[in-house]
Image (cartoon, rainbow, N blue to C red; front, side, top):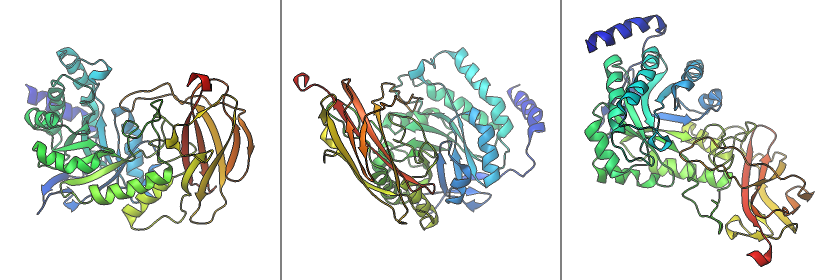
Length: 426
């Protein structure tokens, strides 16, 4: 009966089939690791995750887009086909940390049913590269039954689609998760791992945990806001855009390209989002300007920098102190901030300053956050690369942001956390 139902579903969705021939994707064992093949040709994933410009991604040497949920598929598949990209088709599954109970069989069944039609609709799309069942389902979880739900969907995919591999994405990697996925999810063909500061140890961890199969990096980039030094009032200190670019370059060369079991990766984030700050993971500024990290990716993927290079930002200081200083300012006191920046192309630079309250909308796992409000009227004087500003009157945590634009589509950024308090209250 089950086989008949699956066959009827496939027949029903045949009217939605795509004109172009299906591209077969498979993973094969190589001499010393694994190789992804697309229509029999080697395919190394040079991917990005986010809602950024697909045209730019293709022009910069990218070949794949990662999505997180079915709601993103229509636009992403259209863009991918238009620009010759492939799609990591992510199926969002609800997470235990958000209240979902994987011991509730009715809820699990309802979730499974909710994604079946989308799988059948897109399984023959020429841009499909692989399926991703869930993202970071292991984040702050306790119930291993989640992997049974992952396997249920992965098995269904293999029943209806023999042309594309299936993965699930974890938040970093732990021994317990590797063992559970191996035991409970035989239809998972490869691991997808989100890793930031811990990326250099992924290779050795997988070996120690008993995973000798293929994997990809589902997300990688700058250090996470939970992985960096903190101020004395426990706020994370963000790298400058230049520091991030240097990290992207080092990470890719030393820890991604060198592992023969890694068949590619998705850099994070191709676009912009508010997560602790609006720039933390964003490879583009809010108005679309690319940062130096994007230039580095261009060089890594195409072997050369783009024609127009992004500005470099050496450092941002307040009263000649660095962001690591955990400085406290007295309400209404006057201070000087200076940014040290250059442009590889000697373009004229425009510098914009902004003081924001420290964010209070702090979420977990990439959940959507609101940008904190700006505090206007604090900049007393500005020149080419410095400002004189007045500390806010209200006590509390703030950040000074600086944005540097070459006015040709590229930019740089930095921010400096500081605290306002009365000396007697410190």
